Amino acid sequence: MAVLITGATGFLGIRLLGLLLAQQKPIIALTNRQSRTRIEGLQQALRQTGHPEPLVNSADQWVSLIDIELAENRLGLDPDTYNRLASETEEIWHSAACTSLAPRSSRIHRINVDGTRAILALATEAARINAHPPLLRHVSTAFVAGGRRSGVVTEDELTDAFGFVNAYEESKYDAELMVRQWAAARDACAVVLRPSILVSDQPAPGGHAQPLHFMMGLAALAIAALQKGTSARACFRLPSSAAAHINLMQVDHAAELMVSAAAHQTGPGTATFHISHPDEVPLTTVTELVESVLPLDVQLVPEMPDVPTDLERVAYDTITGFLPYAFFHRHYDRTGLRSQGLDRSLAPVTVEYLRRGLTHPNQQPVG
Ligand SMILES: NC(=O)c1ccc[n+]([C@@H]2O[C@H](COP(=O)([O-])OP(=O)(O)OC[C@H]3O[C@@H](n4cnc5c(N)ncnc54)[C@H](OP(=O)(O)O)[C@@H]3O)[C@@H](O)[C@H]2O)c1
Image (cartoon, rainbow, N blue to C red; front, side):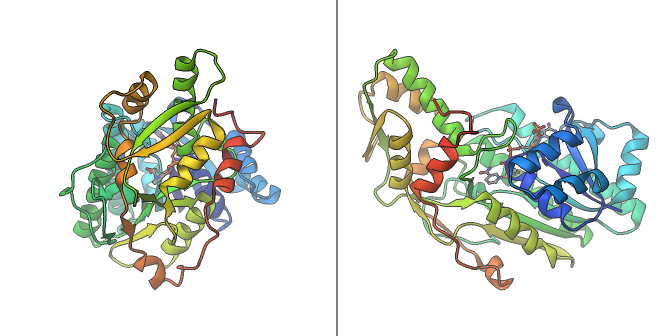
């Protein structure tokens, strides 16, 4: 029997893989067919994310890879491979997703919603063949809370009443709903893990940038195009609330908390954990970071300027799926972690920490 993991090449997924590997159990990594990932590629990513060499080498013994397409029927596998996979499935870590913050995209729905449905179908087939359902560990997001700006979001809360800021949030909400329904209908064990925004002071391996790097890369492109080679700093007015803060969580800690939180969950029903930092980061920390990495002076303003500059127009269009967060000041309840004794204090996420990740010599430059 084996532990299955999707999304093992991802920014978070590679850390989950490292921790599962340390358990010395057979692992099947269900990798994106498009990427043609091989074991050497996974080992290289493990190395780049600081995993010790003996652990990296042990992947040869414990990890096998199967190429899949999440959004296809039977994950795009032939019936024999699919049935064999189902019969070997004891536990599933579903981390793969499309994390684009584009306002609308059918790809987001296909990968996050249809893909989760396909993973649940595999889990159902595994339950039929093995006469008991596999343990399901589903990576969701704290952003299933959608458009809710303030207050405390509890872990049992899953509502569409506040609407959604972007298609990603909505797709993750739909996926989480399906996971809960799947577990309830079968008396199966599901753990829903809801990380906030994941960050690192190390470069992201492979093509997977951390979200802040991606956002800053877009900003750098816009500035370069609109400043037309001049070295002057541009001004950017960010519509925001003075109370705004965001929750940034070190990705290594997040992966550790997820694996620890899931470890003791084997009984029927869904357990949900916010994987968030105990301390919120003021929006001004992010703007300070932006100013230190890009030739940009950010001014916080209460509403969208009547006459935006060319740069602002491009930026507002490009980060539509992100802009509303500059008004959010909600908190994520961490009762789940507390109940497991995992609610320890964490080092703060500072401008220096974030800057190291974005300006590391091995990191593709932001600009
Ligand atoms: N990063 C964050 O800040 C954050 C915050 C909250 C929640 N989350 C959640 O955490 C999970 C992991 O995020 P991440 O940051 O590791 O994402 P990521 O770096 O973007 O990685 C996405 C992973 O999904 C795989 N994938 C994408 N499309 C696929 C397909 N069609 N078939 C099979 N595999 C596919 C990718 O494979 P390839 O590498 O081969 O393309 C990659 O391994 C996601 O569920 C995400 O929603 C992330």
